[in-house]
Amino acid sequence: MQIRAFTLADQEAVVQLWKDCDLVRPWNDPAKDIARKLSVAPELFVVGLNAQGQLIATIMAGYEGHRGWINYLAVHPLHQRQGHARQLVGWAEQQLMALGCPKLNLQVRSGNHAVIAFYESLGYANDASICMSKRLIADI
Image (tube, rainbow, N blue to C red):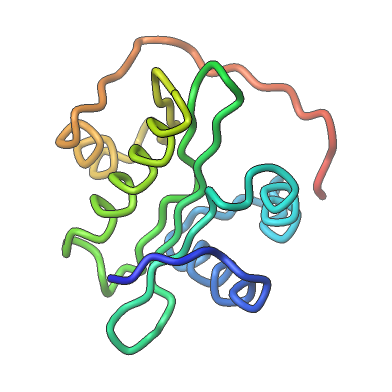
């Protein structure tokens, strides 16, 4: 899989991929999430292309000086279990380490056991912490 920077021409395919991977929720507008990411470290938002040039994967990484984050890791269901997600996570880890990031965080929905097992296989562990949030800007 070839990894390259996200471009605006990718947006429609990316949003469809996220829908195909069940990552989109009614309270998050994916177009707004993309626009927000493009305003902060857009170089940490990449897509994965298969040998035919089709967009099959994405990852958004971020770092604010204390912790790194992974968001929107997605691999099209027809291309899963081929090492693409592992490749993208490795790319994000390398990029964040180069920025001096000491720890990487991510969130997985509690019932998504397959994804939890995937991250555990990469050395990630449950920190036994509670994720709390507060919406400052309503998307919908």
